[in-house]
Length: 277
Image 1 (tube, helix red, strand yellow):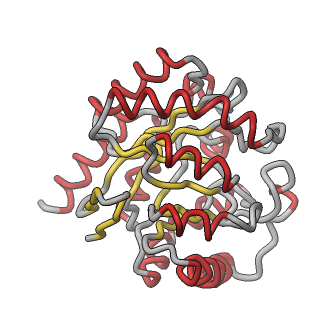
Image 2 (cartoon, helix red, strand yellow):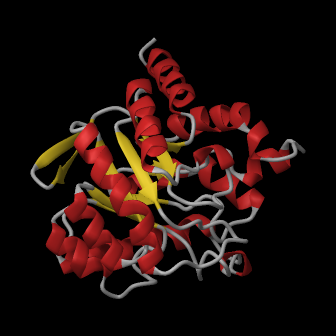
Image 3 (cartoon, helix red, strand yellow):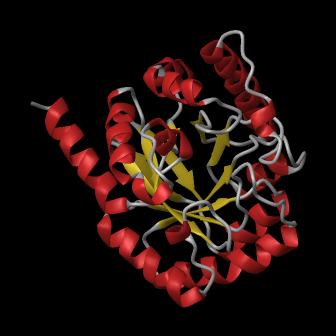
């Protein structure tokens, strides 16, 4: 069991939970996750909570390999009004801000978000760790090499699991030295990883239990799934996502980051029935 302090409110993870993806962007890889307008975003957040999401992850920057880097100012314009309205509308849901900018993290937490989800693990903004520490919120540390635009140039590893474990030990130690108390780790499926490496990571997720931190798995509708099945695009990848979610759960996942909350909830319900049988 993990207990995370979100500005005085406790998030207890004693079974797998769901983080719903809400993108305040025009170019995220899965079109149905895009909600640039406040009313649409709030309606989607309501549906996610009703379907079983514990956390809603709001981001204003696409991070797929063909995405264009956006400024912190653009992110702020996209996410702050949405976070504010969702906080006012859904007081019980936990909100995560998906950003690698410390200034966006600070403004989002002040607007009502509860935690910071950083795809760069603090590597793209040297102020991130001290900012999150001052905000006293949980921090999601993902593994990526380079930037979203260059990450697929950095997929060479001598030993994938060992190198990621070393990365998390080093990075989370730095985060905790800065004053961050609660850290969640995310192996970064699809970020600086080949298709085969993605499958290998999911297969060996339990190796990261040695770190004694919650593990987040973000595989929803990603290209390694539909490419393996020779399907056209992310629109066709729900069944593949559910199949891999179950494998992730069996290998130790604590948080599923998903586009399709209801389907993920079914996976967790079946996983629990299986493990307690």
